[in-house]
Length: 310
Image 1 (cartoon, one colour):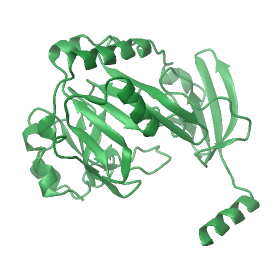
Image 2: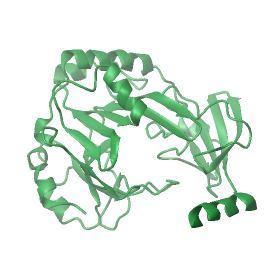
Image 3: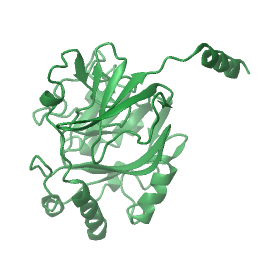
């Protein structure tokens, strides 16, 4: 549900930024998250990440019945996405968690999961190192915890129409809400300081050289496979090359510089309670790990029932 008071805080942004109704899933999402821009029927809003897609006004969003949240496209914004307690500690250690307040999106009941949003100046944008496509876009992640069933990271992204960040409304997975504190509202949106931006650029230069194989090459001779808009293994949601079989039982996950699957797994080892590791292989265009959907044994199913009833 969208709330009038919260929507009113976005009024001054609707002319210079692209506001979007949120509440859809990508067609090949394996987990329902409802984090993608939606059309009036609740399906994916086609072309939302194209420059020609105009933003929605606050009044239009209020009357958009299929939306459970509001997103803002990151054409001119920079976002620090902090996921987890170790990520929160790391962002502070890096010098990016303090300073003057800026627009910050938090979630009810989740102290260490939040996003800091900034509005870089033209000079700061010009200083972004070009990525492998020659574009001055930011998108990389720094992992701070890598365990079999738990991964935490700081994700850096911005200056791209290909990403949006949810700023208001319902967090579907937990049935919580996105919130802002006093002093961290949209009106507090600010540019990064010189020191903050220098830290971001230094980190970006470490990750700007990632080489991702062309999707057409990855899926060549794999007619029954589809690219994943967001990989449930490594969370890759940009320059997507991870893929899933048509029966949705097998995933091929790419080992990239900023997104990669857990390593050191034994064959048959289950991660995230769903995917069993099968193999890792070197191909001419990169390294890929294969995971198959785990089928619980009778004993596992019995133990689950006992845990629920107990």
